[in-house]
Structures are given as structure tokens and as C-alpha cells.
Picture 1 (tube, one colour):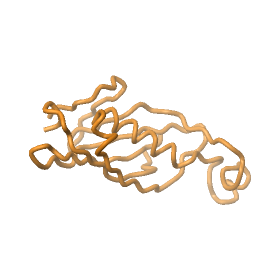
Picture 2 (cartoon, helix red, strand yellow):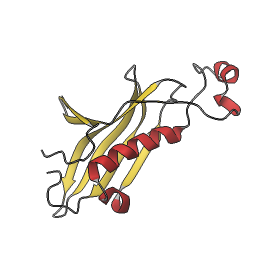
Picture 3 (cartoon, helix red, strand yellow):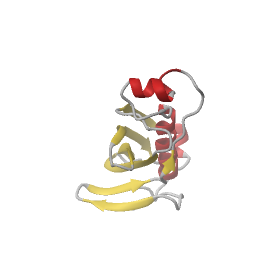
Picture 4 (cartoon, one colour):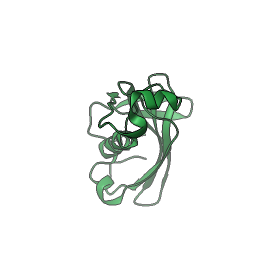
Amino acid sequence: MNLSHDDSRMTDAGSADGVVISGPTVTGWAQGGSGIAEGEMARRAGLRGRIVSNLFHFAQVTELLLSYFGDDWLSDGEIHLTYHAPLNDGENLTPKARLVNVIGQTPRTTLSVWCENDLGEVLASGEASCTRHDTGGVG
């Protein structure tokens, strides 16, 4: 399998189900000061502290996909992401992906995508796909 990407920060780690592609680990930070993101209110709601916007999860997965698919992602990418748990202020998040399938002459590639914190908890998961228009892509 040719893992075509141009971001040297991405890593490939073998697993029983295939190759896992990881983006860079980044530290989340909560911004603003309203609602459930505040410390005391978050604790009363059963959270560990201030929470990071779920847009942060989405942005990290999108960066990983852009690195993997290149410019094709901008014109032809699709993503479906479900949020399972919040990222707390100061915690680390790592976006990951695994090849699910490649279909067609101009391959439509589908990846399983998710974000993990340092404890290995899956905070968001879903699926992304894109048609590769180059000839040296996944396959």
C-alpha cells in the first residue's frame, strides 16, 4: 500500500487491522468564558474541567485528511464525524485514520477516522472519503 502524503509529521503504525495513519499530537485549549466550558460549572456537570470546542477535533482530523489526500480533499472530500466525549483544557489530542476501502478506476478512498486523548479514549470517530485524481495514490 502506498501511503501518499506530503506532511512529514504524519506517522504510520502497523496494527492487526491495517496501517494506522496518525497526525501530530496537539494540546487543546479552551477559549472564551461562557457556559459549560467554565471550571466550576464543568465540574458540577461531571466534567474534569474546562472543555475545548469540538471544532478543535474537526480541525485536527481535517488537517490529517488534507495531508493524506492533498488538494483533492478540498474539492472532493466528505467527512462524517460523531463526537463522543470532550477534550479538556490542556489535554492532548491525536487524529488517526485507517484505510477502509478503495473503489473505482479513479479511486474513491474511504478512511475510518478518529481522535484520541492521551489515555487512548476515542473522543470523536467517523468516516471520510475522497476521490484521488492523481495516479500515484492509495491502492
